[in-house]
Length: 311
Image (cartoon, rainbow, N blue to C red; front, side):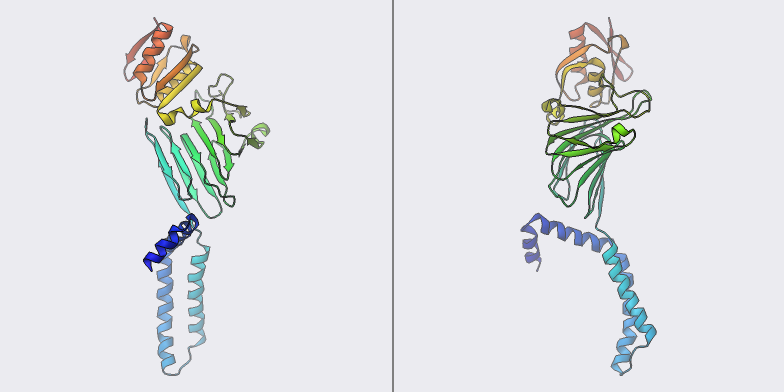
C-alpha cells in the first residue's frame, strides 16, 4: 500500500497537494477526533452488549451516539486546511523558499514575510524588506501579497515587492515591479491611491515616494506613480550586486547600508551628488572609497558608521 501511495503522489503535483492537505487535516483535528471516538466507543459498548442479549438500545443512547458521530464529522468538515509560516532574513542574508503550492519566493536582505495558504486563497504579508515572487499558476486560488495597506493580486506571474521603512516621520514606501505576466495593485487611503492599477510586464508602481525617489515626508497618502525601470538593475541583488545609474548619493548609500551592519552617513551638503556604477552587496568600504575618489570627498570612520564629508 505504501508503494502504491507514493506512486500515486508521484503522478502529479495535484495528487501530492491533496495528500498533504489530508495529512494536515488529520493533524489539526487529531485531539478532537480522539475525544469524539472515545465518547462514541463508550456509548457503543453497552449497545453491543444489549444487542448480544437481544435488548434494543434506549432513545438516549441512540441520540448520544448520533451526536458524537455528527460532532466528529463536523470537526473534519469545517476545519479548513491552512498552512501558515513566517520567513525572514538577517542583514546581508538572502534566502530562497519553495512554497507548498509550487511558488518560489526569494527574500533579500533584512526581509520578513508571513505566508498563509488555504484552499481558497494564497496570501503573503510583507512586513519589511524585499521579496521576489514566482507564482505557480492556479486561477482558482489568487496569490495576494499585502504590504503597507496595498495589495498585489496575481494567479501566475513573477513580480518584486519592496517595502522600505518610514523616513523622518514620513510613511513607508512601497515598490512593486512586474517582471512577467499581469497583476492588479490596489491600495487604501485617498481615492487616487485606492484605484486598481493593472500592471503590464516591465512596469513599476511606487507608493509613498517623493519626486526625488526618497520616501515622501508627512503622513498624508501619496498617489502611486508608474515607471519602467531597468529590470537587470532592480534584480541585481539576486546576483550579489547593486547597480546605480545617476542616482543621488543619499539614495545610493541608503541602498548600500541595507546589506551591512555598518551604516553609511553623508554630509547633507553633498547628499545630492550623483553616483553611477556596479558594487558588490555588503562592500561598504569599497563603495565609500570609490565615491570619495569620484567626488573628492573625505571618508571618516566614526563609532560604528562610515561618514562621507566635504574635505
